[in-house]
Length: 124
Length: 110
Image (cartoon, rainbow over all chains, first blue to last red; front, side, top):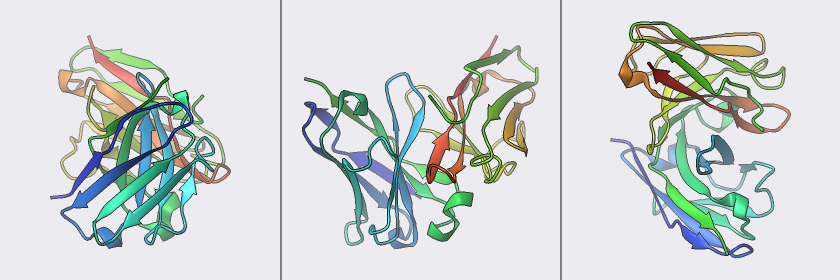
């Protein structure tokens, strides 16, 4: 069955970096586009990034543009989110999610599977 | 501040009908299909409705949704305690060039 498992969360100081991962299984990884979505404690969902098939044509939310970089490894069936220059407001549970329709249909698509999330805490 | 506006809460007694609104603009709901996600405390969101009004396999037909202009709504009929959760609308925003989520609505069964 489709499975997405995030890892790598933890505590980081403001201004520092952290990389989180999402490992996929149960489907053909290279055929799908993925997204990162985050949720601050007690708050709503916020889209962070969309990762293309090759990881070279990604979209980012303005709140993380220039600081976060999403990538993927087709050999490891893994997604990554490199988070640099972290801010306190980046504290959140980070979810990876699979896109249902693909890159050409991004505007019409939806997130059909989600991981369980990994908590990133930015604090001094 | 979320781009899509939802009421923070909605409630009803068992068996009642509850609706949740999602208000947007021409660049998001007015141009693209709306999806709805259900989230129980401490768990990941789950797809509830896609493409405005389509239910994925396994989702109860007590859940229905619609879209008109720059607004969308989710309806829960025959309210049961199992429906107590947070509900989020979502769509693509052409101006922001990214996905936007609603502010979320917590449904409580009285």
